[in-house]
Image (cartoon, rainbow, N blue to C red; front, side, top):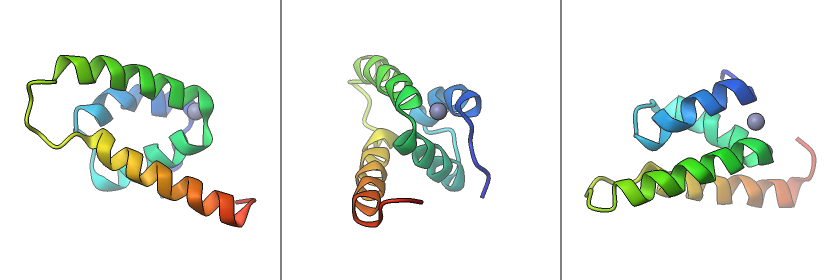
Length: 83
Ligand SMILES: [Zn+2]
């Protein structure tokens, strides 16, 4: 699996929120977001903007999936400690 660095992650946050990434890319990006406050802040910001724009849209929001994955990763980290 490819590891996303900060630059890569921030470049893909937009696509991520617009559901333009494949599953493995979504996993990679969420894994990075879970470990990186800077990128998570970026994501939150995009998410906020994106959410207010597409309020009228019916599509399943990828951020819902992301939140689930983030919660899962946090739970694993809380249990396991170091990676
Ligand atoms: Zn980062």
